[in-house]
Figure 1 (cartoon, rainbow, N blue to C red):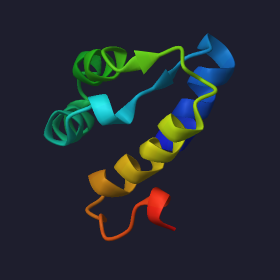
Figure 2 (cartoon, one colour):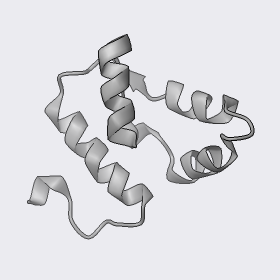
Figure 3 (cartoon, one colour):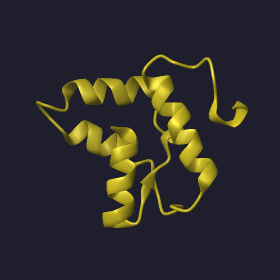
Figure 4 (cartoon, helix red, strand yellow):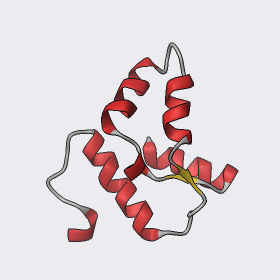
Length: 80
C-alpha cells in the first residue's frame, strides 16, 4: 500500500513520502485509528512529504521501511 500511495502522490502532487522520516509506532497507531479519524495519519504523512521524486535511493529506502513496518528487516535493498 505504501508504494501505491507514493505512486499516487508522485502522479498527482509531484511529491512522495520520505518513509525514513515516519516513525514506525506513530504510523502504525495512526493507521489503526484512520478508519475512525484520518487526521492523525494525514499529519504523520504530511510531515514526511518531499519533492525529491526522482531519487532512486529514497525509493529503495521506502521499500526497506515498508518491510520494516511489517516486521521484516533481515534484508535491505542495498544489500541485494
